[in-house]
Length: 326
Image 1 (cartoon, rainbow, N blue to C red):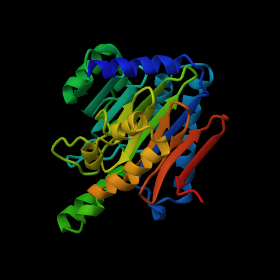
Image 2 (cartoon, one colour):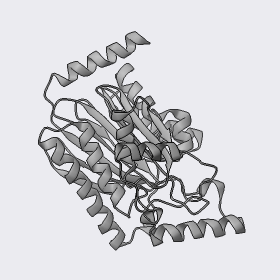
Image 3 (cartoon, one colour):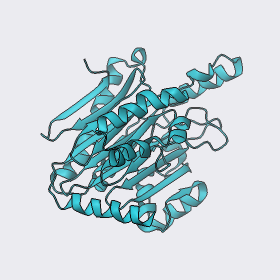
Image 4 (cartoon, rainbow, N blue to C red):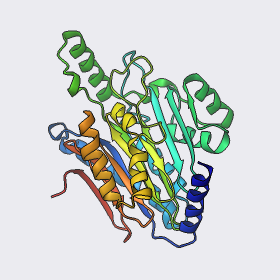
């Protein structure tokens, strides 16, 4: 095990020794339903994704780190009420917003994650603080918020996260639950934001943030803050997932994609496609991922009707998409 870790870190050093052309990819969640995307909603989502790309790529363009780039991009998406992360997060069964996030530095295999917080304005900043300012990887609930206070992470009144759209979605879910009209396999499980980046030093990073599942209960935690399930990065690959979290956890989906790239030498597009379009559906789940390799190749497979996503390619060109590309 120790030898494998050393080998991975040496591979990271080798990758960093060669200049790379920066690449940034973001997502705003899979499970998009065409009939629910009004022209106004589409315009707002596209604008939000563009702002996230602008913020993250500004870091990469000036020689900054992939960790900083994914952090900046995800903060923008957390602040945008059109996405299920930070402000605009969905409500749990108790009518609260319950937030999860994770970040991972592929060059060092350092990671930080938080789950079940209710007052942290930007969960991704707390996840990064766990990575950089604590000896731990994952903190949850009240303990995570106490740690936030000690390191100066901004806490807000829970009312900050409220949006009328999410409130009405929760009311609809409660009615369906009471009337027993909700089909078990049709429950909305999606809504997550994330970013993966390759910086000029060849370093990869991944970050993911979410409000989880509408009407969730019992302190449920999905895949987003679980390293290797919804978020993972090493020297060869970085992944942020969005989808029905239980299945991404069972498949260790993010790590599986990177393991296929590292050990099987599979192209990142093939590895991501096999996990998202074959393995996850075989288990009964759905969703998508954004995946990026150390050469700047990336993939964005999803098996739902749509997935909010955007990217800045190696030519510095910005692209944004929602549904399957023609």
